[in-house]
Each structure stands twice: as structure tokens, then as C-alpha cells.
Length: 352
Image 1 (cartoon, helix red, strand yellow):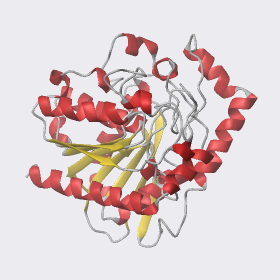
Image 2: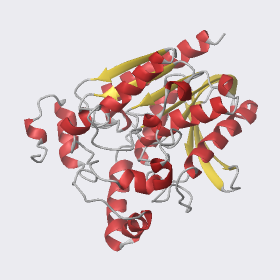
Image 3: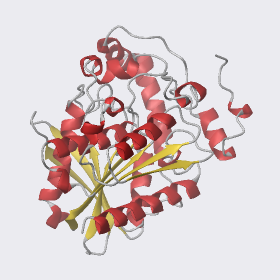
Image 4: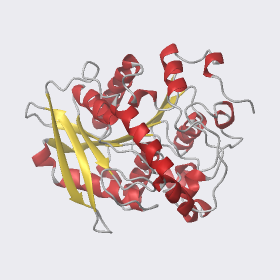
């Protein structure tokens, strides 16, 4: 396969083309690894630390006041104890500063379940954009599998999933303090957070708590566990556009045992109709020029076969997760945020 050349990809919004050309952290084709430890050692090497700091600087640069104003919003930080490990995780909570009661969007950040933090600049901005639409936004900072979030511990599956489920229950238990309606909670997330938003919903459903989730909005979900796959043509045609996935790093980072067992809570792409039965109304949002596009579309089709109320939208001209980099194409970010707000309202109305 020839190296990807963004200048020759006329599907891309010109602003997104510039972004793809400048953001090269994940686009270099890399060979398989033999263990998760190899990925941990690489992340802790001088080169890995330098690459991580470069990424953090780029993410922080996305926090632009003109695009995501702070005015009229309140931002609070909380720490909570996760179950069953008893570890501490953090949460960023953003809402309109008016004392009203709001529906809650429980948002899970991306990064392939292995890196990034909801406190990174792009997520600070994205959270404010969402909250300004009239939502309380709870952003959970779970344990990553390779590089620390806002806590030093890293751990493979199911650590991150357990943290996300624990955070969801914490928000409900503290709804009065937070000023949210505990009966109007919708789970959302993008990329690895799209995986965890689906998995959190699946775990809550299987534990008999599915009625607590009024809806789900998964953006560009990272759920296949294997790339490329013939049933997902975008995993071939879009390889190298922001992401280079043709290796085993995803499975090794998150937990090769869960991948080998085809555990749908680790990789929802393995889910059957029975695994998603009982899901709340679900929106799947995909990006046209994303290697992950078709795994999201196929998950939507699985939901429909299972009788779940589901829709799927495709954002044309965009690469993976364009919306959560608000400085790239602010109008696209704001449009998707409005759609998320509309989906929250729809789901809460359907549940009455």
C-alpha cells in the first residue's frame, strides 16, 4: 500500500487536511509487538516521553477561548473511589453556572483506552462546547492502559471499564450536589471512549441497571480489536489518515487475553445481538475519512438487528474524531455538540 498523501485526498475538508498533515503522532506504520510490556517500556523511554509531551502540547493548544468560551459555565474537579480495586480516579464536571437542574452527559474521553486525559486542552474545550448547549457534562478520567491520565496508575482491561462504571454510579449518587437529574443520564464518548461508552452501557445492562442509562452516543468508536478486516472496508481504504492501525498494539495494550477471548466488553466489535439486547436508544456517529468508520456503521446495524432504537450519522470531509479538536473546524464541533444535545433530549423524552 502506498503511503497516504492528504494532499491527494479530495474528500477532506481543507481545514481537516491541514490538521491531518500536521498531527502525525499515530500515522506511522509500525510492526507488531510481542507483549504489553514492550509498549510500556516504549512509553517510558526518553523518546516515548518526548513524543507524549509533544502530543500533550498539541492537545492543550486546542483550548481556544474564542471557540469554547468559559463565560456562563462552572468547572469543578472531583476525586472518587473506584470499585472493585479501591483506586482513586478524577472527574471534570462542567455545567451552566445558573443553579438549574440539567440532564447529564456522562462523557468518556478517547485515546484508544491507552492514553490521553479528560483534562487535556482539547477535552476542556470540547466539554465547554457541550455544556454551553445546555448540558451538565461529567468527564471521567479512568485509568489508561499504557500512559497515565490524571492518575499515575496504568492497568489493562477491565480497569478502565470498572472506573467508567464506578464514575457513572458516583454521578447518580451525587446528583443533588451536582445539580443534575439522575433520571436523565446519557453516556457518550469518542474513539476509545466510544468503546468504553458502549462497554459501560453493556455492563450496566448485564448487571440489571440498564434502565439507569437513558441513551448512548458513541462517536467514531474504536471497537473492532483487529485491523484490517474485510467486513470493514474503511480499515483498508483509510489506513494512515490520522491513525495507523495495521498491527496488534491495540489488543496488546488493552489486554491480549480479553482480545483472544473475544470479550465484547473489551472489544464491542465482537458483540452479538444478545450482547446488545436491552440497550437504550443509541446514536453512532462516524467520520467519512476514518479507518474506524465501518466498524461503527456495522455496530449500528447490529443494534438494529437486535431491535434497539438506533441511528447512524456520517460527518463528511472529516478524519477520525475531528469534533473533539475544536480548533480544527469549529463549526463541525459545534454542529455535533448540538446533535448530542438533541439526542439527549430525544432519549429523555422516549424514556418518560
